[in-house]
Each structure stands twice: as C-alpha cells, then as structure tokens.
Image 1 (cartoon, rainbow, N blue to C red):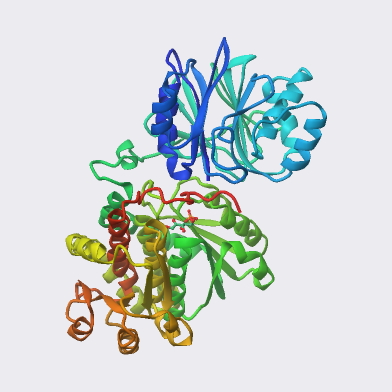
Image 2 (image 1 turned 135 degrees about the horizontal axis):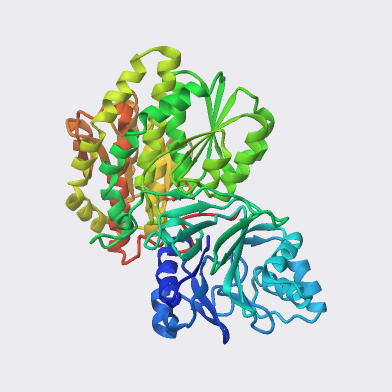
Length: 600
Ligand code: F6R
C-alpha cells in the first residue's frame, strides 16, 4: 500500500540509489512511482504512472541532481494512477516536496479551506494537502520541522510522511502514525524507508520509528524527537537479513524463488522452538483463544483452530481482523488473542490488536522484525521466513503454520502431556525433506497448469485440516492467475455450490489419508459424476482416489496427516504460479494488490 524512501548521501547523487530503492519497494505498490531531489537550485521532481524501470527509461529519473531526496511507489487510493496523482507532491511554488503512505481522512475539509486561502491543487489525492499545509506554515516563518509539527495537529488518518524543502536542501523531515517507517544509518549517510528491503543494500543498522515521532535527517546525522522537540534515544538494531535474500538469485520471479526456499524456511522457523516454549510458559491462564488475521494469515489461523481444539480442547475462534471490533465484548482477561501477520503492518490487524490489548492477552506471530504488530503485542513469536517480496504469501504461510504448530504443541504439553506434543514435533522434523520432495514434482505441475490455464472457474475442496488448504489454494490461484475460484469445506458442496459443477470444471480435492478421507472420497465422486475434472492432491499409496481422478499429485505416504496443511499446500502454490505464467502474467505483482496493506 504505497512505499516511501528517502536518503541523504555524502558526496554522491541520491537519484540512482532512490531508483533502486523504489524498485525494491514495488511489492508495496506499483501503479506509479516518483522521485524528488533537492539541491541549491531547488526541488526537482520526476514521476509518472508505471513501474520504476519503465518510468526511469522514459524520464531518466536516475539523472536528477542532488545529495538529498525522497521517493515513492503508489498503490492508488484517492485519484486514478496517472502522472499528476503520482507522488512526490508539492506546494504551489515548488518549494516543498513530500511523499506519503496512508490516508488523510479529513483531506476534503482541509483542501476546501486551503483553496479559500488561495492554494491551488493539482492532483485528486488526499496527500497533496500535506504539501500545502507545510507551505502555509513555512509561509508564517516556521522551518520544515516546525511546519511538520503544525501540520500533524491538523491532519487525521494514517501516515508515514517524508518531506524536503528548497530552503534547507540538506534535510529530510519524516514522521509516522499507523504506517510503517524505519531509519537506516551508515556512517555519514542516512535513510528512511517503509521497509527494510528498500535499503538493505546500503545498511543493516535499523531504527524502528514509533507513532508521533519526528525524524530529522541532515548532514549531522539523524535526530529522533517527540512532538515537543525532546530528543528520543532509540536503539539501533543490526538486522541479519542479507541483500541476496531480497534478490531473485537467478529465479525468474520472487514467487518461485520463495516457494523453493520453503525447506530452508521450515528449518529456520523450527529453530525458534525454545522461544515458542518460553512464550507458552509465560502466557498464564487462558480459557479461550481467538486468532485474528487477514487473507493468507487468516487461513493459517484456521489451521490453528483445528489443531488447538482437536489436540487440547481449548475453545478457539478465528476472526477476520477487519470484522474483529464486532466481537470485542466477548473478550476477557483470560482470552488469548493471537495476531498472525507476515508484514506486521497490516492496518486492519493493527486496529484489532489495539482493541484487543484493552481487554485480553495478546500474542503476535509475525515475520518482519520490529514491525508494529510485533511491538504492540504482549508476546511475540517471529516466524523467521526472511524477506518475502512476491505479493502472494508462500514461504511465509509455511513459516506461520510451523509457528502455530509449535505453539499448539507446547500448549498441548503444558495442558495434556506428551502425546500431541510428540506427534507434532516428530512430524515437523521431517517436514523440510517432504517439501523438498514435493518441489521435485514441478514439471508434472507445469503440464497440469498448461491443461487448465484457460478455464473460467476452479473449485477447491477439503475437510478438517484440509479445508484451510483448499481456501488458501483457491486464494493463491485467484490472486496470481485472475481465474475465479472458490475454496469450500467439502461437506458444504451439497448445500449450494454443487450447482456450479458442470462438465470440465476443475475441482481440486485435497485428500490426505486422515479421519475424513472416506467422506471426502464421497464428495469427490459427487462432483465427478456431475462432470468435474478431478485434480487430487493425494497420498502416494491411495490408489482408490488416484483411480477416480483425472490428475493426481501424489505425496509421500509417510506424511502424518496432522501436518498435511504444511505439505498439501505446496503443490497448490506451484499450480497457481505456473497457471499465472502460462497465462502470460507477472505472478510477483498481481494487479490491484500490494504486499503490505496499510489502509483499512
Ligand atoms: C495473499 C496475501 C494476503 C495477506 C494479507 C495479510 O497471498 O499475501 O492475503 O496474507 O494481506 O497480510 P499480513 O500477513 O502481512 O498481515
């Protein structure tokens, strides 16, 4: 949902660095891009609709002069993606340039009153009011930092903002509320960004900025202040992500690179065992668990419900973060709300977490270190998947699931002894090898993708632990291939969706050898007899299902069904990826979507 970046460099031009950094932020938005630099001549801006490579080629953005600058990638909320609406935005006289991630909710009223005062607006965006407010306050003799403080008293909504001005060409002023912002420091050079991958090439020394903190970058370095002007001493975290982790490393797309990283990711997440055990033992009494998340993280949460209710019998709910507020009255101090999020910056999830903090215990399971969700919850488990750049969550889903399994296992050990604990731990040990084996089936999956690339509808079904897998397989497909698809609990088909089944419609049946196998087989036959093409994700020794199916992707029979969500999803990720490629699409950057959804 938009990304911002900025830097002040010593004795070198910033534009090439900002071009590279905005490219790294494209997973946050890619409908338009722009860069502004400042030198003694004034502000220079180049921006347009499109991705940075195209826009740089067209406008030679890399050629902008100056050692200080800011950049932006846009995911449109107010105003269509075009040159005028692209950031950076400026004031009437081009003395100020700003970039913004978030939404200014009261921009309409502010715009009307600024227009009455004589300001002329160029764009349809909510953001432009910030540039004109800064202009107004600087016109009254305030410097950029003071003008920003005045502006913050007026604007409502969410924001990470960075601003530069002609009167002080060696300064960037930035701030945030409910949108992410980090600072990077490397010797005499300093950076701000929405996220670490943007500046990973230049520094690993990161400071996480909190809401209502003001960051001033200048030749002296970085100062972080509260809104009264007091200096805040912040810790510098040295992060251990390498630059390679945010590169494609020979793969055509991040999505396939990240799917191939799943065995390694699994090993890394499993190393967090001891941390998870500590978290479980520090939580205290709980009588209810409530998972809260969006999208793929919501599907991981559904697996959590099956596991925890099945193994331990603690009542567990799964709520969509955007709907959470309607359930707040049911929370008590013995409810544990678990927030699942790859980015740790999803606006819906942050809002829900803030509410839950008032009434219950909170735990977050998060990938991005130091992110808002991680910092604002009582307890945090990191999934350690490394940076995920492809918009569709793949390896992060596996790592979220592993963290949830570890959590459930230690909770089971605490409450009910060792049988559930040992079963999960033993199965997780062999997981990396099982995933490796599934990845070797890619060629077969490519052929299935070619066969079904032109259909209009897909259906995914599964029961029990395979129901979330069906939902997630369906989400992956619709998200990166734009084919309409639905994921259903197999038992629900007869209550309506069966009407959709017709000749040739592909139905993906997720059917491990678990307690629901017999009933799932019945459902498979029901859709088959109505003309569906069956694609079964099935155990290698399950010859019955194989003989009923048009296509089969066979998984190792030694996979304990309890970890089927961690394995049966992998072929579905590959299927979605290869259908996307076969349709000539860019799986890394699906249209209308962004990796980190920082608006509600
Ligand atoms: C789908 C996908 C999204 C995210 C959702 C939540 O592939 O990536 O559905 O899962 O936007 O994001 P996080 O996990 O960052 O809170």
